[in-house]
Image 1 (cartoon, rainbow, N blue to C red):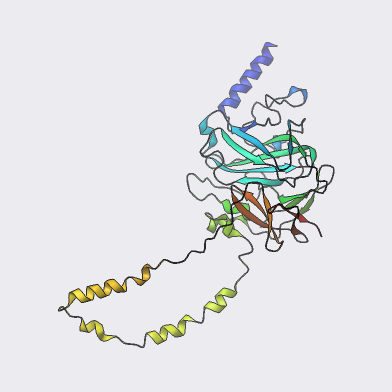
Image 2 (image 1 turned 180 degrees about the vertical axis):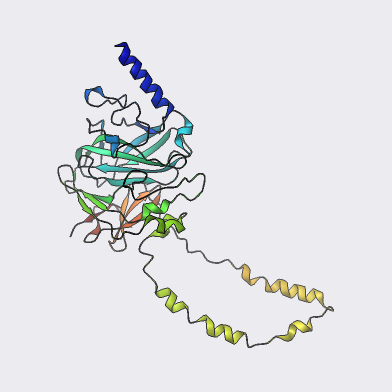
Length: 357
């Protein structure tokens, strides 16, 4: 008995020395307040991933029941403020097929765990999330500074939805810093390049219709390398794949300026030689008046989308894109080939899903 107590204390000390971040609320798998089979507890639950997903911990009894469209108060914490590694990116995803496939329902860019500790986040379950028992809620964290790691905890929940035809579609989670992962985030302290454009690159689209039904997974529409998007770090929306295939602008704009410039150079103006020293005041006022036209304000074309609530979804580009609201901003992604985004038609303006043909 004494030996087991000593080993437990040593495990606690080791986990404290290397502790980082974990889900505190709701209780994740193998937490001290939610032990696994045989009362198994992961005393190193705050450490980065060794095995994906869920650190290899199998499913447990659901710890809460939530209605589709309602929210879950999430709390992320660690042993000390320094464990937050200057924040980073977070993703939340759901799985209806025993952790085999996940669909993203929320993404926090850069500000996850950055300014608040413990970090509190209200996670909205999409209104179109199908009903299911033993649904897995997954949290992923890509830390800003420190070792390039990936953190992942899982919570078992039940979801209620009276709509038997509810369909949930969205991108699969972005994986980085684990064996076989496509992406790698260099450290991004402060306001440096955080590679947020990675989240807009095409990924597989996952469609769930509830527990007991296999998901439909459509591969990404293109396989552009992650490094190709590194030139547009501060603006994730600029990496939309719909903007790239429009080369016609260059063909129409090129031939015009050459003729107008040659005609303007023909008009000689020897008036500069007529400006000797006698009238300095007039020349100074003339230059002053000539300097005014460039001060005209140039119109900006930054017309942002209307404000949205986290967890909302919409269709865009005539059904060719599906969008989700993340931190008050719309993030649109291409739907998979053979699918089309359609509104659910029940009066909820931004609720949308992708149906198979």
